[in-house]
Image (cartoon, rainbow, N blue to C red):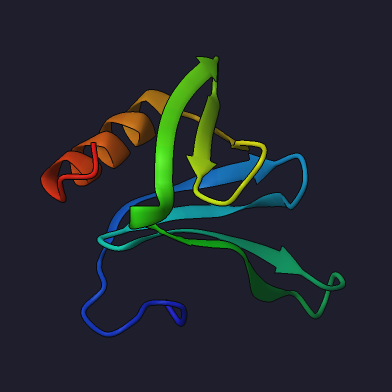
Length: 104
């Protein structure tokens, strides 16, 4: 993965959709939440990072509806809503990571 930084590891990865950014892949690494979407034409698709937030900026995470993951990042007025097949898995993974770092 080109977006991974030195020493960074992917913890969870799933297909995802955002009303604002479109379809892509959501990643949780040991330090960040990243949403990568494919942009461009049919023959010239390129990956583009649309969400890149440090885990330390997460204030709250919840599952308000079926297949809906909601993350409130510091500095954001509105929570970020991302649709994934198993939002409960994501919520548990994020809360576990935040608990391990003393953030929750």
